[in-house]
Structure formats: C-alpha cells, structure tokens
Amino acid sequence: TPPPDFHVPRFAFHFPHPMIPPRFIPLIAKQVLRRRTRTLLTVGGVAVAMFLFCVVQGMQSGVAAATRRTASDDTLIVYRQNRYCPFTSRLPQHYLDRIARIDGVASVVPVQIVVNNCGASLDVVTFRGVPIDRFLPHARRSFDLLAGSLDDWQRRSDAVILGETLARRRGLSPGDSFDAAGITVHVAGVIRSREPQDQNVAYAHLDFLQRAAARGDKLVGVVTQFNVKVSDPARLDAVAAAIDAEFASDPDPTSTRSEKAFVARAAGDIVELIGFTRYLGLGCLAAVLALVANAVVLSVQDRIKEHAVLQTLGYPGGLIGRLVVAEGLFLGLLGGLAGAAAAYAFMHASLLSLSVEGLTMTISTTPAIVLIGLAISAALGVLAGIVPAIQASRREIAQCFRAV
Image (cartoon, rainbow, N blue to C red; front, side, top):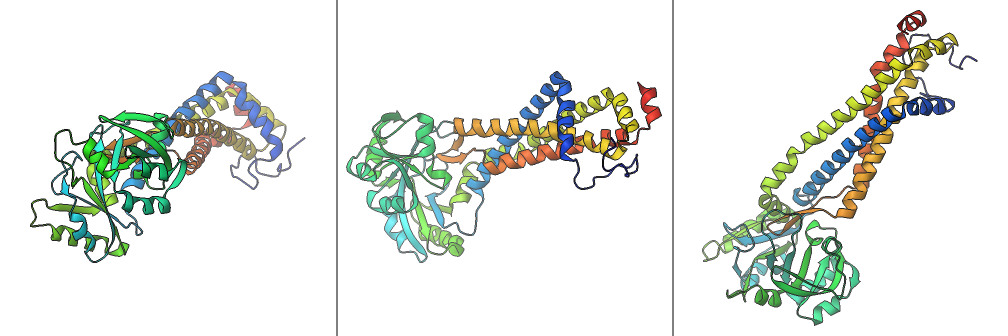
C-alpha cells in the first residue's frame, strides 16, 4: 500500500513534519542491524571518539572553573613576591593584623601549605594548615560535612579534614591514618565544597603543620600565604593593590592576586596545554562524521535494488531519503550514547584531578557535557546521512535496476 505522503514528488528531498512516521522505525532499525559487524564497528568507533571528546570537554570545563574569574569572586591570595612553589613562599604570620586593618578586607586566614609534590601530578596530597578559631566559622558555613565531626578535628592536634575527592581517591574515611610528605595524620572528617580547591586538600591545624614540616627550619610563626576575603567583590583589584603597597618596603614583599588568577598563573603551562586539546576534540568530531558517513554510504550502495522496489511500490524519493538520514541519526545516537555514558562513568570512578604547586583543577564530566556530546553525535549522524540520502532520493527506478 502506498504511504500516506504518496502525493510528494518522487524525486524531491525535503523534511515535512514529522520527518519519519513512527511506523517506519522498525524498518530503520532492521536496516541498521542488517550488517551487524559493520554496525558494531561503526558504533564502536563513534563511541571511542565521543568518549575522548567528553573527556577533553571535562578537562576544559575543570580548567575554566578553576581559573575563570566571575563577578562574585571575593577571595585574594597573598603570596611571597617572586615565589612560585609553596616550599619557597614564606611570609611572617604577624602580617595578619596589618592585612586585616586594610580598608575593604572582611577576613584573613593565614595558611601553611605542604605538598608531597610541587610539580604537575594526578595524585598530589595538599595539606593546608589553618588556625582553628578563624577556620571553623568558615567551615560550618561553607562546607557540607559528609562524615566524621568538626569537633573531633578541633580536639585532636594531628587530625585533618579531607576534601571529598581526596578521601575517595585514597580510600580514606574518619578514623583512618595516612602519611604523605613525611607527615602522619588522623582523618577526623570528610567535607564537600563547591570550590575546586577545597575538594582535594587536607585541612590540618596550623601550629601542628608548622612543626611537622619544619625539619630543622624555623617555620613557627611563618606561613605560606594569606587567604583574604573582601567585603565588596567589585573592589577585589583595589584591595590587592593596597595589600602589596602595605608590604612593598618590608623584607618580605607580597604579590596579591584573585584566587582564580593565582591558579591561572601557577598552572599557566598546563592551562595552555589543555587549551590545545580542543583540537583533539575537533578531531574526534571529524572521526564521528567520517565513520557514520562511511557506514551510511555503504548501506545505501548495498540497497540500490531495494530502493528501486520501494519506488515501484509507490514510496516517494523524499521518504527514501529521510529513511537514509534516519539511519545516520540512529548510528550517531547509539555510538554517542555509549561513548558519553562510558566517559561519565569513567570520570566519576577515577576521580581525576590535576594538581600543580598545591593547586587543583578537577577533571570531571558533568551531565551537561554528556547531553552536549549526545546532541553533537546525533547532529553529525544526520549530517553524515544527507549526501547519500540526496543521492538515493534522486536516483530513478531504471537507473537503480541498471546499477544492480
């Protein structure tokens, strides 16, 4: 029986609504699965390409979250001038009172940083020594406590609070002990934070960390940096300039930047390298287009005689073309779904994060990235099917039989 749109000119190629009547979906699935080996290879190739694309997007998203300043950013990092690694930045702790008196400063927290590796690495443990009285109000307000107790951390001098990512990556929970950078600590709690820098650190008592990391050096009364909260985010740059001017003539001058700018400066080479991976992402998309297009072209060539039979039965060329495009869409969706789902599962299971100089950039694939990857693979599937669909829709019946 001729289809309902029999009145459509036989060799026209357009997409009336709906593109494909639902009753043709089993036919499309049957055509796609007819050459199972070819279909599996195509879907597998698309899945690998989309897996890489989603991982690359996750890396770029993590870098953006850690380095892109927003209008709501209100945190400054005060570091020793001309120093880069935490091992070399040393500032007198008594700078705290002078910073607190600067107009626009809401709060100041002195921080001692100790890392087991100052270079770029995927497995860095960063200790942050903080004073209890200044840190606890911030912790209760900004962190979600997943396990353990902040009171236990307060009572025990060698206790630490772990970010969720570090705890899961190392398999640690409250009550455990572990050693890193030559320092042995007791886990008192695990927290979750919206800030990337809090997810991969171990918060320790400032005086304990100063003594534990001394190793013959005089670190009591010396800190790595000051974390400064400003009262008005619009005055972030002005407050930073005022802090540096305050200590410009001191033996230990400072260099003050916003937290996002500080991360971008410390990880400049890595940020540039990850930025280059966008070309890898484009290559993945090109691979998806080529794989799907190749599969659809071969499928159309295999079914020239069948298309002639369909035209003889009254199927217009436009409908045949839309069926071919739907095959490309089907292949793109299958491969895209498999690759994006695998990337999402892998990234959440592996908990990858890239650290340099004690700063962390989280590598994660969000549901939004998965949906974007799935939409792109579907769009590329449609694009890959357009040219063979046009050819199939415009081929005359006699020409089809001669080509067999």
